[in-house]
Length: 330
Image (cartoon, rainbow, N blue to C red; front, side, top):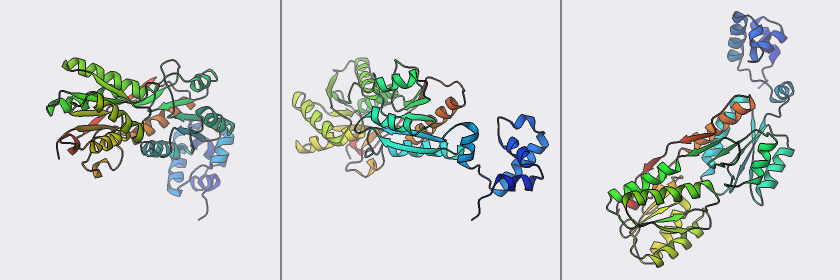
């Protein structure tokens, strides 16, 4: 199928090519008569015209590419985030370059900067992050997703971890639990610290003991190990709030290895509500975050920064709770 060109649009609208170009460009549209702009836009839509990315990039001095760095390509959390990013960037003519932070965030970022990306979306930020501090100093357009750094002027799009954790604890209390433990994520990540602090505050509000064990990472094995330590120390725990779904899966394994039943003997909640939790046995109750929407908002925020528009320093998404049998006894 032959590509529709700017000349085709100009011919269909009965204008010069330069006029068609100015009418299609928001920055120069004001110098063209409104009736002519309307005619050119109608012709472009009718023909299915799409600007050639290379030509557009040359006009705007941009590469029309955005770099995305995620901590782990195998974590199911990041698929919806990437899908949301692409959904917002593709209509604007941007391509997305995705890389893992392994073996290091610094190397991943430098590789993308070397490729002349117009901006970066990072899901790898630590609470104290020299790479992001350097990007802020260099004024590289950057947006953080699912992470927040307080020390630098870089916008972030995150879920409301305090509200999400409270939803989980409130539900467990409603189900009659009073001895509730928390398997916390790494405190050097904003999500790990925020969910831990929210758990502590909520338990204090109820007047219950604060029982916490730290996992070394947001993966299954650290969750399994931390749950073992927690239940060895506090065998009377009847419910566990896991800092994410993978830690929750680790908690499932430990509870079963001790001869106890998930949902009946020990209730477990996850966090993020990644795909297929409802297919587990029993299906896991989890705090749900709309990560596709999070990706879209991160991309929209980056586009605003690239256009020189002001953006909010923190954009919060409100989570919900997906209640399943892991907290209702089957």
